[in-house]
Amino acid sequence: MVATSQTTGEGWSSRSAFILAAVGAAVGLGNIWRFPTLAGESGGGAFVIFYIACVFLLGLPLVLAEIFIGRVGQTDAVGSIRKVSQESKASPSWSIFGGVGAIAAFLIVSFYSVVAGWVLYYAGVMGLDLIQAIGAGEPFRGALAGESQEQIQQRLGDMFASPSLLLAMHFAFMGLTLYIVARGVSSGIEKAATYLMPMFFVLLVGLVIYGAIEGEIGDAMAFLFTPDWSKLTPQVMNSALGQALFSLSLGVAGLITYGSYIKEKSNLGSTAAMIAVADTSVALLAGLMIFPIVFAVGLDPAAGPTLVFQTLPFAFQTMPGGALFGFLFFVLILVAAVTSSISLLEVPTAWGIGERGWSRTKSALIFGIGAFLIGILCLLGYNVLSDVRPLGFWSLFENTDILDTVDGFTGKVMLPVGALLTSLFIGWKADTNLLRTTTGLSPLAFNIWRFLLAWLCPLAVTVILVTGLFPSILGS
Image (cartoon, rainbow, N blue to C red; front, side, top):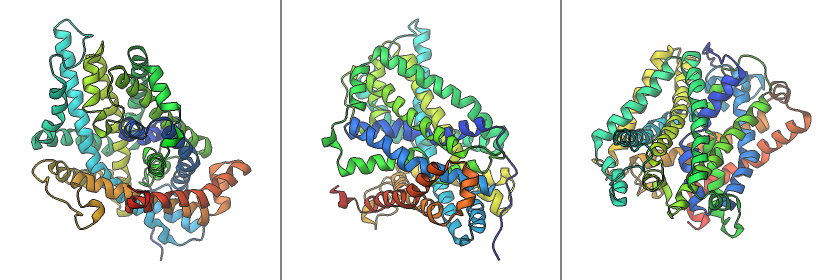
């Protein structure tokens, strides 16, 4: 006897509400922090162009595949895949990749909240600095006046060394995420997306304009869009490929879950395209926001993960209006983090509703508190548990702390496995007529989409999976 799931009974009020929420799910720290970091480390233009190609050849087909599954299933990820399997006369065991996605989302939100807590701390620091600037009658002065570059950079280390500070920020951020998810789709997630996403885009465009005026926009454009093909090494291509999937939140069943809340019939192909275009545009605009400022003050675009928390605060100190725009910059990242964390927590919450029959409040509390507790272990890995190596027996993770281990395992193993099984399931097992009627694609677009899912996506995702587990293959 095949297990059944109950519907969550909720839905988006309109197609535009779904698109806002889905874009919010995709747009997060991966776009604002990770993309500029990888672009800077990988030499700019060649990485960016290859990344864009990966988004539309690999990411977009998978976005549509996940939305399709949710639209047909009308319940949590596991139940939705099971329903598509039944209608396609395929094995219900395919639903396992919905479970992989739900577990991955649960683990990711646990450390994502910790990292977002760093953003919350810096938003507070920059906000207090702005208040002091206004109080001194200098609202348009540079940020963190009177602090040396060493002092600014030391803030990150001091934060890591304080378990109580990290815990307070993690608690505040996870509490906000849990509150929104517990309120439901229409009263919580949709309402948050309706207010936060327009705010996000206004801030993003405003900061891009600021960077263009006060920074070196010409140098940034040349860096981002002039390819030096000699820098397109196997490592860079693999990074771009992984970022394309990571930035669209693929493999964690988020779009399956959000797609299940679509009640009316609509053209899923154009909807998926809008999500992919919006997500990629945000990543590119993030580069045009950050790199003009970096080049204007002569800092290193390849600063790596410290770019946002150490390099840019110092850059804002040297620029007119740095106190104001530095604060707005961290508010922007915080908004992106909130919309993404909501979607991550919603995946296991929907599983609890659909598979276990729990109320939304109970399910959100169970998974929210569980993720919070795992997050505590992650943040303690920067101080009192800094010597702990959870997967130290595995050479790939023998030198990684708790947070980086959870991040690495989900990113290198669980997300690629989820994306691989999604592409194989839709590319080879899903019923063709069901796919045609639900997606609304033209015959040509449908054939291209199915081909990419059946052949190119599995090959590319397998490369990510294998090279992630065995990086020596790429000579790294």
